[in-house]
Amino acid sequence: MIFDTHAHYDDEAFDGDREELLLSLRDQGIEAVVNIGASIQSSKNTLELMARYPFVYGAIGVHPNETAELDENWMEWLKQAASAEKVVAIGEIGLDYYWNEPEPEVQKHWFVRQLQLAREVGLPIVVHSRDAAKDTLDIIKAEGAGELGGVIHCFSYSLEMAKEYLDMGFYLGIGGVLTFQNAKKLKEVVAYMPLERIVLETDCPYLSPVPFRGKRNSSLNLPYVVEAVSQIKGVPSEEVIRQTTLNARRMYRLAEG
Figure (cartoon, rainbow, N blue to C red):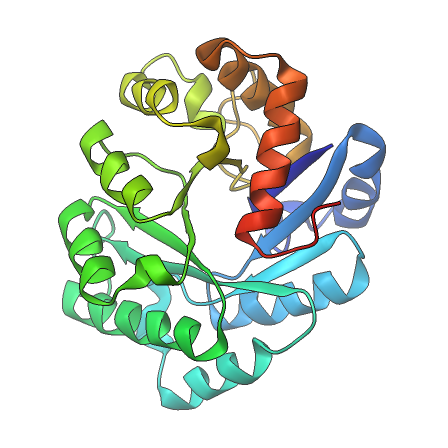
């Protein structure tokens, strides 16, 4: 069964049918989902979802574009919340210069601080990096974040950058973008990297694969990503599912079911 390592089921896009959709997942071949915090509020929502659904795990953290809300009191809250059963990572954290808010120095400060938090609580990290390739890599190296383990979510950089992260032991999150016609760089990365370092993700409700591009995404669309990986790697879909689910469990330090 498929493991969705990165989803946002607390998003308002699911307000109309959240319970019905989540309860349908296991019957459709989805074994587990990690709901990812992107703000203090969505981290709180994540704690509620994982308490309600046995197959939902959680990551808590603050997305770079939301870091203006952070202070040390909230960092202490995150530290306490990280001890909850089924919290498996700190994230999503990182840098995002596409929106460029708040200013990069604020983003960098709280990225480093949340890396420190991950070290304090002994959890892997979920890294968001958009239009910030060099600064993200520089901080991860300076902080020795390879020791923490985790995933570079929605990987979108060059093969050379992929090699840097793979050499540090990170997994790369692969989702619907792989099915896009213009995803040449990502296809090169997937062709190069070992299957043992790929984890599947949706980033739902965003980034639906072809043929649903532009529509609301969900874990139910992951078979399209599986098929794309299968074709690029030249291995059966069943092997892609088996290995990526094993990878997800290892990355998030869950029992290998």
